[in-house]
Image (cartoon, helix red, strand yellow):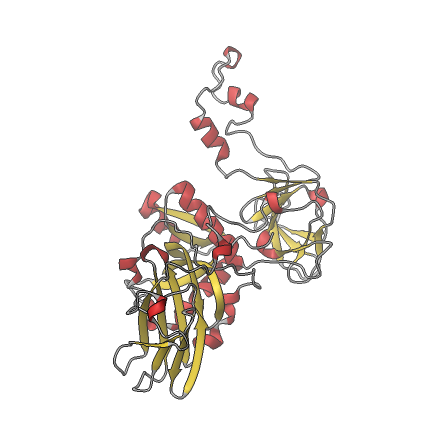
Length: 433
């Protein structure tokens, strides 16, 4: 498993790379990694990862009992799947991209009607790893195209006016069909400060002498300006929607930790299932509804559409990588008194993989994580090299579980590398709304 864990440190390039060899995967149900415990306990587990920077597919296998003389790995005749035979049983997975046999430079030299047995380490071994060259001629996954930028679910450009948002747990309706007439993407959180800093020809006004922000206030970009929730308009962020209170139904306000109305940390709860769905945004005079708590229902569709929590958190991390030029983050909880955190190192922001529990190519980022006993002290010590990502407590706990139950958790070699554990966070692949 060295290639999926520690060996990857020597072979992956940190730049964003977009796969042209992996095909689309429809969005799956919430937190698919959390359902992989059974696979983790399996006697045979296969994981294949596309390393586009070095044009190879790494195949890692976990075995129990260890390999023996009858253990074999066979590449299929079409070079698109791999089969494991071990201890009298067989299992196979689809590869994230088409490959060629490492000893055969072209497909024409390979037997057309049968697969090829791959060389594996001598037994006994509980973990096997092989690398296969990527096929230059492959047309598989061409429909994906060149994925540029940070794809996010439910961007303003993709949302129709007929969109209805409801609770992903109980289908309680929060925003009804036709309630929102226009969708607009929100700027980044520090948009006003950046406009004030980068504007080449800041307006000057003698009537504003002594007030630095006054000219910018007239133009609408001073740091003191703010966006106000507007009836009939849905503002769209990476991880949440901002609505005017009159556009939201089916939600109750839970007082903040101070126990008084108007506190900054007031939560929004679903009236039916009591799940936390967002927060009150007093500065914007509106409500923020978390995307991961919602499902989208459209008139022409039978089933509502929802996306895993990972898709939104990974989008937020990618945005911070682009805007703040950092790759190390500390996840913290909004729960009062919670001082611990989880440090994340985004090692590879864009890859495709398949596994025993993920049969179709899935876009993801490879993340190394380790617990931090005192998060705030650690952030102060690290300074600008680390960025804090504060999450609602239940989301923070879910993220820890997702990382510890990802498909890399089955491999012993993915744990304990200088205190880091390897994991995967799914990314949105641009399929759907």
